[in-house]
Length: 342
Ligand SMILES: Nc1ncnc2c1ncn2[C@@H]1O[C@H](COP(=O)(O)OP(=O)(O)OP(=O)(O)O)[C@@H](O)[C@H]1O
Image 1: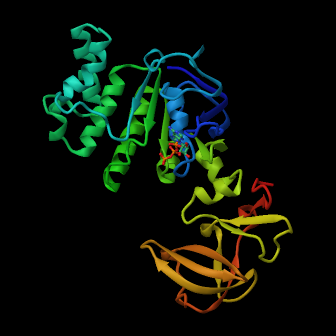
Image 2: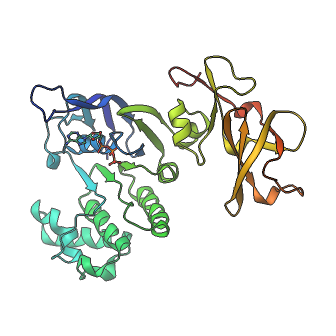
């Protein structure tokens, strides 16, 4: 196991057009990751999260800055010398090999003795409940089972660091939720420092001990899921984490000039009369246990999320004039120009 240190990390891809400047996709990322931590790197498509992970893995050259794993700077080390194991989105299993051989392959190459290989594969198979599938070929497995074999192959190597690149995105919603729990359990048992890339904020919130929120190659925030949800560092983080996203208003009553006021849909209350912002209820969606109310305050849309079990005896009527209130501790203020938290 090992800590990971990312210092002033920069990635520029060379231009494919001769004479043109390259494309910078990572802009000076700094992060100190403790030994044994589970870190999720989250952000929208194209924000640079895979590039960041691949730089740690040694699959992409580092343009500037340093990466350390444990007490070694790894910038110039080959992937095989970095003591990491990576789990990919497409599992990358060998189709002609059995589950056992897929898990054992890396160890065979590394010339680990045969009986030691058997001990390690059997142990990983037991942890992942793959023991009864060791003779099967990948095509005879379900997507979730293939995913576990890919994890097993990483575990048997007993690396210092696990790197996961969207490993759950090929699974259906139910299996994804179940595999999330398995990954959490695995991390509790093995305690190996892990970097996990996803574009899915629910995956990030539920798996991360701390999360790195990326936007256009910049680290917008590095914090626990609670910090990121309760104290988003920018309007980007505020609207990326949380569903539906935080309401961000420029013109509502009480918003200072040059500022943006943020309040989450779940922190707004709705009443037919009284104090607060005057709003018009335009439309609504019933999600089961919750209802989303789409209102308009002046020119701006404000979404309110209400718990269905607390619906008032008077039904919410589209077109009605309503009042929105919120507690002051739930208000977030951002600078309108930079988007940063004030
Ligand atoms: N080999 C390359 N050459 C040039 N540009 C690249 C290369 N690989 C990636 N990029 C660019 O770098 C940026 C970051 O890509 P990256 O794959 O890291 O994003 P991502 O956040 O992982 O996205 P996704 O979730 O879609 O996989 C993108 O703008 C992409 O177009």
